Length: 289
Figure (spheres, one colour):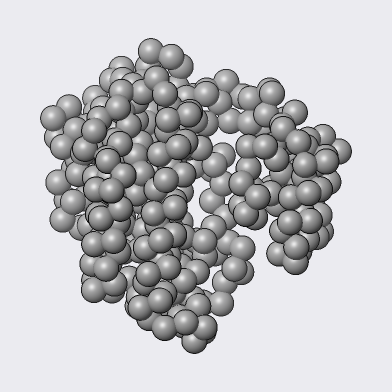
């Protein structure tokens, strides 16, 4: 069987081009490992590979999910495993590429089993976080201090997730994390590469790329998604840059201010990605790009 190649990196680090080159060199096919690029609604804003790029080598799991769906890590893991097995059965090397470290971790270290959360509990928890995120984080510090220390106080999504698991089960999320399922990729069956540009170079790339996205139609596709009236808590609505563009659509800010904020949000996101890679993928081969 062909070993699996995993390629991680912050946004705008050149992962797409690197993956395509690797696929051509190693008789491989590219599989998506990015939680936003699974959605079909935001092709440009999520920097999904272009038609010209996907024509060079086969690509899998890009843009196949509707924005109204919550595509969980477990759902991605199942789809990615099927794609990996299919590639290997045809003698192709699976090359997974993306910026979602959680996907890579679940694939190589195992997925943490968590119970279903009743809709009422989820709604109440999200309301608490939405109304007063400081109070929600303070409660998390009491009921699950270990999880709280690993979550930024402004990360409402992860705060809500940890709280809802505790409220539904009485068991902290950190305790659930102690018993993960076995990884789908065993040691020795995969290798990991992390693309890590110099920060200032990366920030310049982020700015120029986002402005190019706007020129290429990202504003129109974001507006089309906004007009669907989807639940703001859905993952697709939290794509980097989407919230600032929504503020522009709602006339809460001007266009230039929305673009500037989106670029800043992208920089912050890239910084978090690089921190995750340094801490959680420290044994991976690092390539300075």
